[in-house]
Image (cartoon, rainbow, N blue to C red):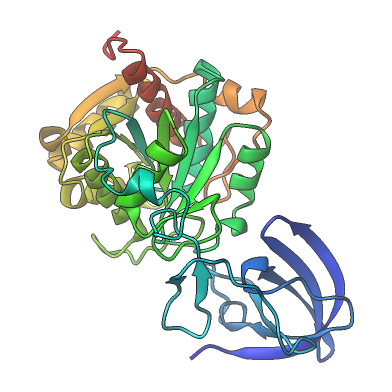
Length: 363
């Protein structure tokens, strides 16, 4: 069961669009807590608030923060969006959203019969941190490209929780965001992954869509019990809708866990068992021994037979991330500490530009 504690707000630590962080005195201890404006306005210093302290009390990594549940000083709070679709529905935290597809939305007409992406490249990542090198390489090649980020509901649900997305939008590397399923807070809301891709195409007018879960991926040390499986579903959706699905591999030679060395088992199982549409897998052009290992893993898992592999030289990824001043990390590791991870995602972004401009991807 969830655990709740009550305390007094002592300081506002941070506030930006959609999110705030406060210091809360609970008993004799001070705790930091995160709140989302979609669920209530930021409290004032001195307000008594109720926190969900479950993950912190359990010392968990995933969801390991306190969250503001309710401000006891405000008996009534919130305002209707005008939309009738509920996210987090049938829970005490359900909220009304104006999904782009709804009849009351100004975008409804554009989406009534929309079922084709008409060849739009869709870069699908397995980890949230991969979106940074992917969009950085897209904008490095062509700053005028219109890039949409579709966040699925496999991990964090509020997109405001992602400091990375906020940074990428501030730098103009993401032009618009779409949140699908029970994820919420994007520039546009959507009911599911398929319709979210159509929102990216028909409403945002994106040249390329980048898809991933939010921060907070889950793993269980089993073949299929991980959030990375959503990558396969997104690739299938992109292919079914007539897009060009491109898979960003999760590659690492710095991760100490055997199941994540070379190509992570998350990528292998998502591509083998989740991606039902034939997709293009962007393989970073690594030094020969490491590239050989990656290609062997893709062959032995059956991925090489099911999908098209394209080796892409993305060595510029590190320099491009530095150019845009994006201090991204993965599992606490910097670009210098795990460069192949970032090159793999950068390769997917670079491959998308080749598809857009009909460049021979083997060149």
